[in-house]
Length: 204
Image 1 (cartoon, rainbow, N blue to C red):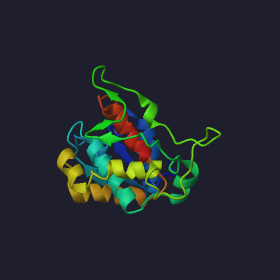
Image 2: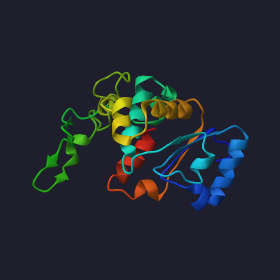
Image 3: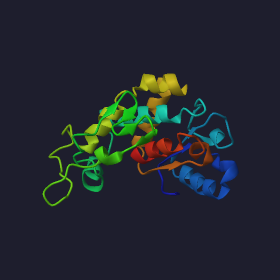
Image 4: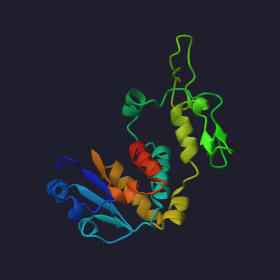
């Protein structure tokens, strides 16, 4: 942690609840690391932040999705990593769909998903087929871009309560100071949408 150039701390008040972790954050700060804190409350951790954003409780996915969309639209991602160390080029099944808030395979009677349509297109050897570029409309990367495209900075701001310029500042600061670390705790996980929130962190 002491070698991190930027921290995004959201759903965590580590200065009070994880003081040992905060020790290493402070060491990184001595070396010039930036600290971003997103929290409904102005905490002891927030008091040490370079950027503090007050989020509407439970609305984290909106501003995180806006950041993901901003990163994708402005090509702020590490393309070498995306191409070689993720499934971005894998082609998704032609049966996969996302419509009106639901993915393909949803059964309204049971309120559960059949995930058969969520797999990859497979070749004769039953291995995933790779697209030639990230622009292929069937590849994971294109599906990701399509999914998050509706989360403009304005939409993220309207839902989360964080101003547009603040969301943009968070995205730019995190992307321009690598390597970065994201710290979260129960403030993110203990929501009905906790899984989606943490997945947003993983995508970022």
